[in-house]
Image (cartoon, rainbow, N blue to C red; front, top):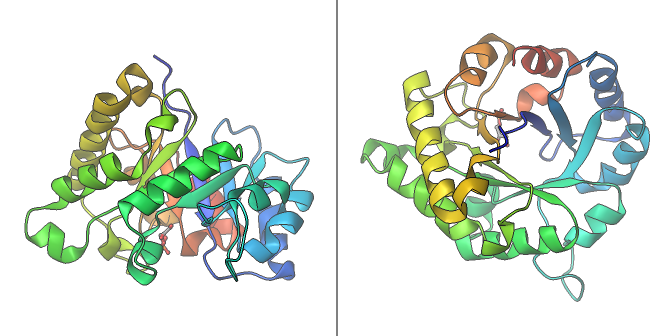
Length: 247
Ligand code: 13P
């Protein structure tokens, strides 16, 4: 079995213009000898410029979503092949902001994940429960159900990661306790092994939701936490680097 390679990815969401690439370059410049994989996922308008700017650095570039179809009459959408062509090597899929805002189902996320693989992109598939679901004692059931439904069989043998992002922790400053994070991550790992056998031991399971310099070390050292998907704190190189260094 290969131990998961840690990954810290910054999800810029709908933030960033050309001038913001200075923060991505400052992140790259501050990485030093780290063996952690680091990625920045800017808005699609910046994919090619970010990839060009970061070409000779250790920072990978990712997309934030892609369409399941390869091309066609889908106004406003971006395909996985387009992201790859623009220089992305990863893509975030099934983020809760897309599941909630655009009605993305597990089946659609699985189709997008297949499309990403076909285009040669490494998927980061997001799962997570709402506060009501957690209060009802259903967090594990919801999250493991999303893992089963959102990860297509073609992922067998492929590089991918899963991001556990409790919806109630995103952008709120709230985080689950370390024990709660570990309970969910251990359940995700067991589900991955059930689905993919030994290969299920290799994907990094990232935590996302209000990760910041002050809580990063504790979260990143919890059992089965193989990195982080960072929103707001990834927009400033100083904060993002502090999180990367906490691993
Ligand atoms: P915040 O780190 O801003 O809470 O966002 C988390 C997230 O949604 C990353 O995908």
